[in-house]
Image (cartoon, rainbow, N blue to C red; front, top):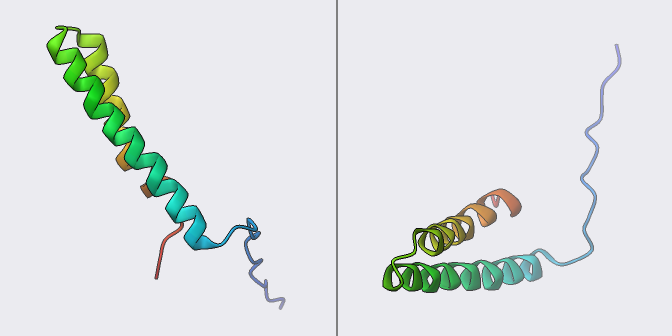
Length: 72
């Protein structure tokens, strides 16, 4: 009977803290930009701008949940 050894994941080369900081800054900018787009869309009565801002703000929450590895 053979035992299968788990294969360790490839290391990206960047420290985990650096990836978290870059992701935070990018997602914060995406969230703030989404709020600005929603405000501009509301002022201009543009459903397209408002929807783009809503999607951008939603992506700001979705990306860290999908990209960052789970922490123990």
